[in-house]
Amino acid sequence: MFVALLTFAVLISDPPSSWAVADIPTVITNLRNWIVGILAGLATLFLTFGGLRYLMAGGDPGEVEAAKRALKAAAIGYGLAILAPILVTTLQGIVGAGE
Image (cartoon, rainbow, N blue to C red):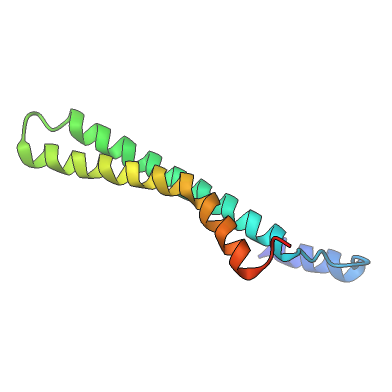
C-alpha cells in the first residue's frame, strides 16, 4: 500500500509530459510473447510432473497411464506454444493491425 501511495505522490508532483500509449501491433506482439511464455512454462511443469510420476510409478499400470497423460499434456502445451505466434499473426491479419 505504501508503494502505491508513494507512486501516486510522485506522479502527482511531477506528471509525465505524455502518457505512453501503445499501438495495436505492439499490444498484440506483447500478448503473443506472454502467451508463449505461459504455455511454455505450463508445459514444462507438466513435463516435470509427468516425468516424476513415471519414475515413481513402480510398475503400477494406473500411475504409468497418469504419467503418460501428463507427458501428453506437456507435448500439447509445447505444440500450442509453437503455434501461438502463427495464431496471433493470423489474428493481426483479420483485425488489420499488420498494415
